[in-house]
Image (cartoon, rainbow, N blue to C red; front, top):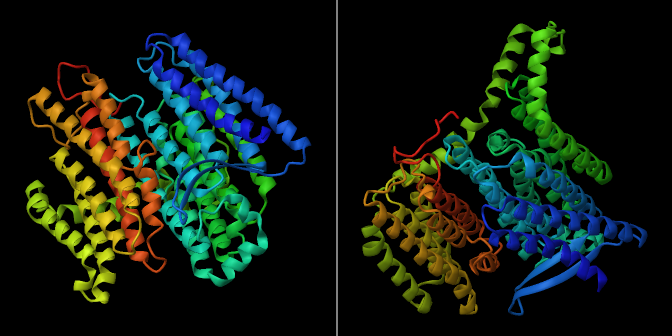
Length: 625
């Protein structure tokens, strides 16, 4: 009982501090900074005491089934907390670094216009961090995983009146969402492998895992690869490495806590947490090790040639995490945890002192100039040295790779679907959808071979609607309507698979309907107030004049994309559990729709409410500032 109370408190205390900070006056700097610092201090004291008690009690892993959100006898959505050595190290290091950053930020952020917003987001991040680290199953982990992505987006776009922070925040969020495909598909395959919402403590049962993988080797390999994709995206490993330097657009404290020390190590955490599962898959272990080795070899020379200290630190951290991937693949858990703690503290220190260090180095270079000492690169053939230098300077064109091979094709396909307009949705797709519902209730009208292919076809059509929304540059209302429509096509597609309780579909759709209606009202209200055409071709910065409307629309965006503020979050996992294990295409179509739908939604919010203000009588920052 004492373990349950204390471990639950490690989530409830940050939640309590975050909620209190929301209601404190905006001008009361000392108030909400004191709440943040006090909450983190209390958490650190109690966590340190509990870790010591846990160590002297035998270091036995503790699993707590905290709260059951849904249970129909077959499917069970459970908030589950788990405390072991990995949790203890990650939670203590994260709490201590957050303690230092909170103290530092009280003075560093003084008189900033977004002072309260910074501390709100900082507390939200720490809540997400604690929830993810303490997660005892994939559902709870994905809850914290999504919260981390949103808090990252908010902190990168902290200077929301500037062009580059907003642009880079959207880019980083997009990479995060692509990584989410791995988590979603891993959760889906895990349902079919275990026929339950498996808890991480059950993975410690070696004979059970080995037996299950012996009879389902293909699914086990698939889950391992999906986890590797999610981990690589979160920890900025190849080919996702280019997002980390772009994330440094936020304030220095957020760069230190997010991308220098804590958030960037969550890919390593995911691999450590699931290690008892994929350690039985040699192919996955080799892939993890090779990926870490390749990333370390490429990130190191990139760090050597960067002109800004933040970018140098970012790529140095990427290289170290690549080495951690190798250590994880070799099964060196203790070494990985020590490496994580050392790298986290070092990068935090480097980022916090970087402004002073730059000033000292400039001064030292001016007064005590010393010629460059020969390095190992001087022994390379000139063509090789110059080629490596140019490639490293261009960061191996990783940005171009994603634009050309991931986002580019989706945009091109979306542009070829320009004929899908609002009228097309209402006059053609809506009747087709109604026909689909009629066929669902009278499936005997069609041969079973046709019925079995309908779910994949409907999932594909829903994905095309998302691609069209992703490429839309004119009408925010159309882009929103396309994403909302996709949710209905998704629900219908999965419904053809098997007969299940209609309550499950209602759980999924209910959040979409409510938030979608509020979203359309927000867009209509904004257009009425502005009395001009509001499109998605540029940044409008309307948060400057409509901060409350911007907040409401941001919550709407989170609700439609399936964030945990609506039942849709449970519904997404619930519907995925009804996709059959041989329906890889359907699972892929729905996962891609979920990911790119979220990107399209957040892009609408960014284009309408963030960035330089469209009205020229407001002060605006230059694009390069």
